[in-house]
Image (cartoon, rainbow, N blue to C red; front, side):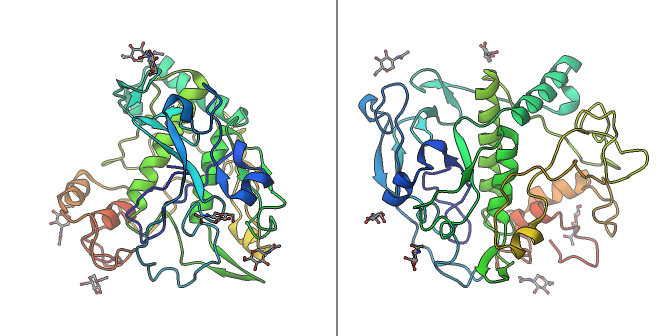
Length: 358
Ligand SMILES: *[C@@H]1O[C@H](CO)[C@@H](O)[C@H](O)[C@H]1NC(C)=O
Ligand SMILES: *[C@@H]1O[C@H](CO)[C@@H](O)[C@H](O)[C@H]1NC(C)=O
Ligand SMILES: *[C@@H]1O[C@H](CO)[C@@H](O)[C@H](O)[C@H]1NC(C)=O
Ligand SMILES: *[C@@H]1O[C@H](CO)[C@@H](O)[C@H](O)[C@H]1NC(C)=O
Ligand SMILES: *[C@@H]1O[C@H](CO)[C@@H](O)[C@H](O)[C@H]1NC(C)=O
Ligand SMILES: *[C@@H]1O[C@H](CO)[C@@H](O)[C@H](O)[C@H]1NC(C)=O
């Protein structure tokens, strides 16, 4: 999970999701490399007194590093989270979280022993009040500073190896935008050098587990924020859709009548600001995205990849993808053939000339 070690399928990197518990963003924690905050229920680190967990050395995978990343010791995300912390909470039973204060996904109740089944629903099956509730939750998340997490605004080195912490508040919605940025950003090599071929969440076997965890974490944050323990993110079934049919003011926002890159002023999201949209700027300054608002949401549905017709996968494409029996193949990257992961991720249109077959 965030600061626990997650044995992932990706090249050899631990999954780096970029959650920094506020309680561990101090120079004391960074210098000691320990992130074992107290559980509020009993005040002991990792809820140890209640048998929830204990503070343990982080055990790293010793799988070899893949060819995507020919460096060692230059990127904070390597061997996550060991650059920042080498002791974290390890939780027992169904407990989870940076202080073992949460339940594993699929469990609830005071001792995390009650099974919970949550179902994600088609956005078109939501009633109007349910849909409005979903939008209201998003607004609340966008307006609420995360009580539990902060984001680093500098690298470990820029923090003088932990002695001068650089962290910022962030709202709950943007925390997830930032995490996605952080895991997929380029490696800063110093001077004006960057390494662009690395990505800790895409174009490799870790794609599915990383994003699955990401969505589960996101749902959990919304559940905690709203007290709606049954909240799930609705899905959009785009099979056979001719265009972005949820890009309407009722749902994710229609197109601005004059500027195709902007949302319609009547859209719920037209007043939202984006973050982490200028990777070249951060790279040139050898800096990290610090979560500062960078302007209105930009969207231009249907025009991302003009070459693909139809632009969205068909039912037959989905059937084909699901018929692939190997999760991952060969090079395990964006050129992998007949890889379920790669086909799913890149929507490789198997009939077209310009893409690798599956
Ligand atoms: C963890 O980091 C601290 C501080 O750098 C160091 O003293 C300690 O030996 C490390 N522990 C392990 C298990 O690597
Ligand atoms: C939870 O566990 C504690 C400690 O084992 C126990 O005292 C308590 O009764 C349990 N609560 C429930 C609701 O099962
Ligand atoms: C941080 O640690 C690295 C590696 O141990 C060392 O080379 C560097 O001098 C340290 N920087 C500071 C500011 O302490
Ligand atoms: C969540 O769903 C369960 C099972 O349907 C129900 O018993 C519970 O009351 C719901 N909780 C809330 C907060 O709506
Ligand atoms: C391409 O995908 C379709 C389904 O979209 C499938 O029926 C067909 O067999 C695939 N072609 C090849 C060459 O794999
Ligand atoms: C995938 O198949 C194509 C076409 O047969 C081939 O040119 C390419 O080298 C294969 N890619 C890998 C990574 O094996």
